[in-house]
Amino acid sequence: MNEWLTVCSTDDLVPHTGVCAKVEDKQVAIFYCQRSDELYALCNYDPIGQAYVMSRGIMGSLEGQPCVASPLYKQHFNLLTGECIEDPQFKLTRFDVRVSGNEVQLKRPMAA
Image 1 (cartoon, one colour):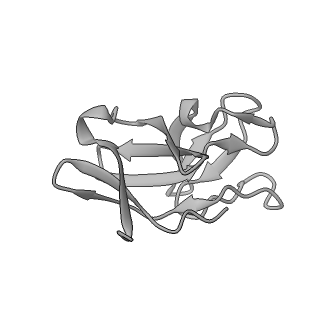
Image 2 (cartoon, one colour; image 1 turned 60 degrees about the horizontal axis):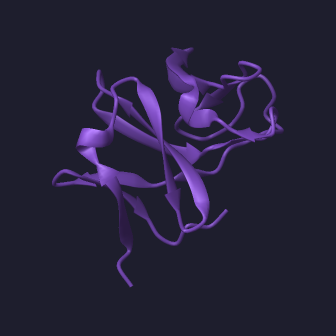
């Protein structure tokens, strides 16, 4: 089995915002920071708002760390770790993501 799974094209990415991909029955929010040319992938499920909405969150940074604010109750989740900044008991699963050619790929297995 291929260790990396293509989920979308780089043309599907929108700078400084998220897109959602359904991968192996999971919703994954993929964020593209154009300024740093970095990709981040987190579970799309907001554990506080209890809805699949994280890809619609607002990207930014707090204390120098990249984050996304939930569009529901505005809690911030660290894009590097998935941890909720305001309430560390909540954490989003983080996925390894890369670009190969013009393909955005997530690493298997997709545990979570």
